Image (cartoon, rainbow, N blue to C red; front, side, top):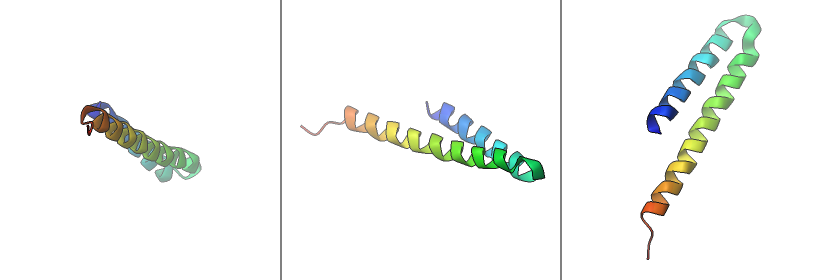
Amino acid sequence: MLILVIVLVVLWVILAIVGFAIKGLIWLGVIGIVLVLGTLVIAFVRRSALSKRSNPKA
Protein backbone atom coordinates (compact mmCIF):
# COMPACT_ATOMS: atom_id res chain seq x y z
CA MET A 1 0.00 0.00 0.00
CA LEU A 2 2.89 2.33 0.74
CA ILE A 3 4.16 1.98 -2.83
CA LEU A 4 0.71 2.86 -4.17
CA VAL A 5 0.57 6.01 -2.04
CA ILE A 6 4.04 7.06 -3.15
CA VAL A 7 3.17 6.52 -6.82
CA LEU A 8 -0.08 8.49 -6.46
CA VAL A 9 1.64 11.39 -4.69
CA VAL A 10 4.33 11.55 -7.38
CA LEU A 11 1.69 11.54 -10.12
CA TRP A 12 -0.32 14.28 -8.41
CA VAL A 13 2.80 16.42 -7.91
CA ILE A 14 3.68 16.07 -11.59
CA LEU A 15 0.11 17.00 -12.47
CA ALA A 16 0.33 20.10 -10.27
CA ILE A 17 3.68 21.17 -11.75
CA VAL A 18 2.38 20.79 -15.30
CA GLY A 19 -0.73 22.74 -14.35
CA PHE A 20 1.24 25.66 -12.96
CA ALA A 21 3.86 25.57 -15.74
CA ILE A 22 1.29 25.95 -18.52
CA LYS A 23 -0.46 29.29 -18.09
CA GLY A 24 -3.95 28.17 -19.11
CA LEU A 25 -3.98 25.09 -16.90
CA ILE A 26 -3.90 26.63 -13.42
CA TRP A 27 -7.00 24.57 -12.59
CA LEU A 28 -4.96 21.44 -13.26
CA GLY A 29 -2.38 22.58 -10.70
CA VAL A 30 -5.08 23.22 -8.12
CA ILE A 31 -6.60 19.78 -8.71
CA GLY A 32 -3.12 18.25 -8.40
CA ILE A 33 -2.54 19.92 -5.04
CA VAL A 34 -5.96 18.82 -3.76
CA LEU A 35 -5.26 15.23 -4.85
CA VAL A 36 -1.84 15.22 -3.15
CA LEU A 37 -3.33 16.44 0.11
CA GLY A 38 -6.24 14.02 -0.11
CA THR A 39 -3.97 11.06 -0.80
CA LEU A 40 -1.69 11.93 2.11
CA VAL A 41 -4.61 12.38 4.52
CA ILE A 42 -6.22 9.09 3.52
CA ALA A 43 -2.88 7.26 3.78
CA PHE A 44 -2.24 8.75 7.23
CA VAL A 45 -5.72 7.83 8.49
CA ARG A 46 -5.51 4.27 7.16
CA ARG A 47 -2.02 3.78 8.55
CA SER A 48 -3.00 4.98 12.02
CA ALA A 49 -6.15 2.83 11.95
CA LEU A 50 -4.11 -0.24 10.99
CA SER A 51 -1.56 0.37 13.73
CA LYS A 52 -4.30 0.77 16.35
CA ARG A 53 -5.98 -2.44 15.23
CA SER A 54 -2.75 -4.48 15.25
CA ASN A 55 -1.61 -3.21 18.68
CA PRO A 56 -4.69 -3.11 20.93
CA LYS A 57 -4.13 -2.03 24.50
CA ALA A 58 -5.85 -4.68 26.58
